Figure (cartoon, rainbow, N blue to C red):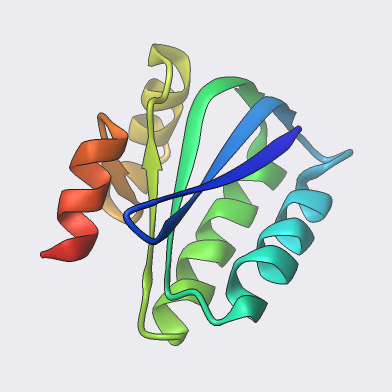
Length: 112
């Protein structure tokens, strides 16, 4: 469900499948244990293989955004399908979360 790689020293977490009430907390825990607790300030979430997200998943994304901000960092969402983009627009989370079209755009944003 999660695959972590590093590009230009920034962790990129590829999330596959769904983020819903049954697994949202596990995703949060995974990112805290493997990224934040390792002292990383930045993270890119590659959502290219994410098919579905519910309100609990959206809540986790907001919580992660806050956690990274509190450590002086940023988290960026990339490669979302149109349904997820529309959901973020409808909930106005596109105004709160860092969203970029590509991993390269996210890296440029984080390095600026």
